[in-house]
Image (cartoon, rainbow, N blue to C red):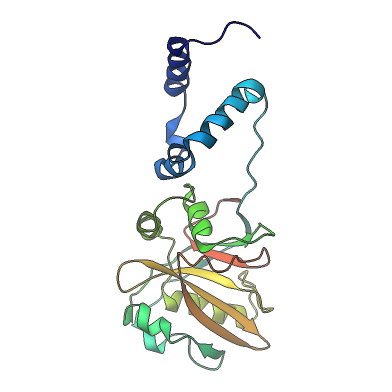
Length: 236
């Protein structure tokens, strides 16, 4: 081993790295969680990288979501929430839909829709799906995730979801699973936050329930799909 690195040389090396890193590609909250709050682990990882990894080709991170089908919705009118997800196609409708969501669903303009297949065989949380859709770190706060999902137009109204299901039932393949696996949609809550509507078909009828964005009790399998407005990226 050669001459040890002095504190001054270490600061110079770190300064060069800091000035030549494209920080716009990272989420501040994610870096805070992964590095600043875990100094011992961070130091060990950085030491290993300096010794072994600086010349290595970085391994590409596998996608969380892969586009299964691109489709669109037409303009839909507003409707009372209590009147949504009812009728001949529906076998069950979760009561939390009326408790959590606004009493009225607003009109929603026509838009592009991407139906994404989950990829992780070990499962994916709603928070991870939202972070992937927004291309931010999974440690991003829930408030920021909800705000960005709404601002970027990724949320659905219930009538827009009904439109897609009606089209699927009429024989058009819009990309929804109809074999018992779940289809997820981000929906806006009455308190300004965002939840996830889960719809699935068993036999010939549909079931719908709503879940919190921060629900970590279950990791959803790679067979399930997330439906996003205003998204057509091939992978996220």
